[in-house]
Length: 392
Ligand SMILES: *[C@@H]1O[C@H](CO)[C@@H](O)[C@H](O)[C@H]1NC(C)=O
Ligand SMILES: *[C@@H]1O[C@H](CO)[C@@H](O)[C@H](O)[C@H]1NC(C)=O
Ligand SMILES: *[C@@H]1O[C@H](CO)[C@@H](O)[C@H](O)[C@H]1NC(C)=O
Image (cartoon, rainbow, N blue to C red):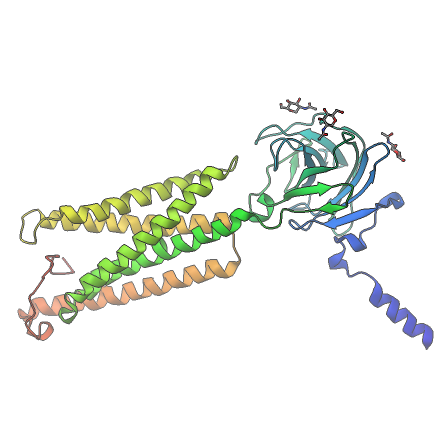
């Protein structure tokens, strides 16, 4: 009985398979042991190492899961900067024949890389993969004798072709996979979360709310509420208010986005940026055009109205497209994408219902030949000179 209990207890003490990537439970072939280990804060990676101060030799085992099976894992010291450019990397990948190898890469620029010697004398390069798909690279590096703290970076990728690693993803986890490593004090940091991540989130929220939600609501107000004579001129002020707040928030978010773009070296979201610049230009044009609006009985007023609606529609479409682009880049929890799609569906539903309703109202008005029903108080009609029939 006692032995059964002991057996059950010892089972409970076994590490759970899902945590096998953590430092505490990882074991290596050939009974390799390391003095220190840190679970790195991104990409579920861990660095095990032993530093021999007598001959300044660093022995490491870097463990992580490639982003797809058959992919690669990489760990690097960067003596000249932080992040990818300047990284002296050790990469574990599959050769075309299928065997696992570890190779060094001196990464001097973004783009394709080829194996090359790195700034540190390196030996004992090996790679292995366990049954859960975690790949480990082993290496010994001779560090400069007076340097104990250095920038580190790590990465995982989806595949390798002809023994070369393919491009990795550019998600938040990938971009934040860097920090410092103090080989002596045993401190390793992952740089915490990207200080820019907060800025990215603010940019995302501001622009999703402004370009992506407020401007469409403002357009819906203008297009449909003016069909109800009792809401004249309230709809006009609501429309202006909504679009001005949307524009102010949008421009603020746009400024933050441009700033983020200028700080981001190497990674460029060209389409997102160009769409953002077009949006800002069109929205600014739309606001300035207000001052050029012809008087309501001017013969060009009808053209101005058409112009105003076409540009407005273009802004809304571009805005929604760019919000989706941004969501793809930021890659937040799925619920944010779902929430935005839900808001769009609601706005779309409202548009559909209102389109039908106002169409019916306009038709009745025509057949009645009288507006009494909808113009009860005899309020000045079309005070703001926006063209009368919605169905026109
Ligand atoms: C440094 O010392 C360790 C053991 O003390 C030894 O295993 C390693 O080979 C040495 N490295 C160099 C470069 O001499
Ligand atoms: C790594 O690449 C840089 C830039 O091309 C070069 O200056 C440096 O000498 C290279 N390092 C080694 C060890 O080859
Ligand atoms: C480390 O030593 C090298 C030569 O031994 C020297 O040039 C360099 O300035 C030293 N660096 C530091 C941070 O002390």
